[in-house]
Length: 267
Image 1 (cartoon, rainbow, N blue to C red):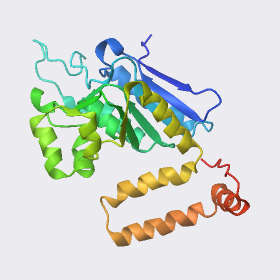
Image 2: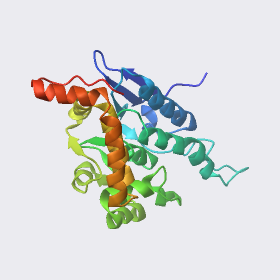
Image 3: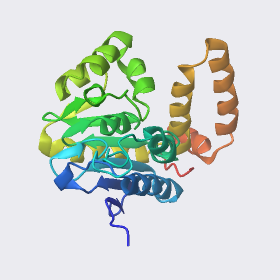
Image 4: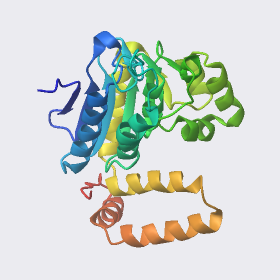
């Protein structure tokens, strides 16, 4: 039986689910099994109509130390010193990154400690990142002769610009949480004991909002990075045509006119 390294639970009396990386002795370093479990948990949360927001965090003193280099898929050995790491990316990392970016609910990453390598890439693939003031961020791929992967080469320059992205990727220096927030790599920081409570409170706010509109806002922002103004205008028009027929639009307008809190429920 495959050991479980990913826990998914819904908060009591809440529309927020919490996905927890649970391999703390290894700083939640990623194995192939763990990557599959993580993707399956995201898909399960997205398919649960009672879930309207998802918090992702790590157990122990680190969020995720990246790929476990002892995993047989990547660990060189005397009989097979060369490894096809592209196979690992194609079959495990790419489906996980796609699941994160296509999740049916907003995602909030609570970085409770170090986020390194692919662990950093996957944190940045979430919609919002909230980090402990004691957390740190490092790519580190250059130290093992590799390039940033799991989406980092696409995400970094869009978050912090080309110059800073190259500095982080080429030098591989560790970045403090305060500096990560200052340059726009993450959304905000909090004291260590307040990271998860703040992430949950943020997810509660998102869960009370119109989910479909939030998810389509994510899609619009991502698409805008590869399009032009005319395409963006027409995409906005197409999506607004869809949302204008939704329950949440009617509920939002009625609530506004009646001066009461809206009760959104569309997924």
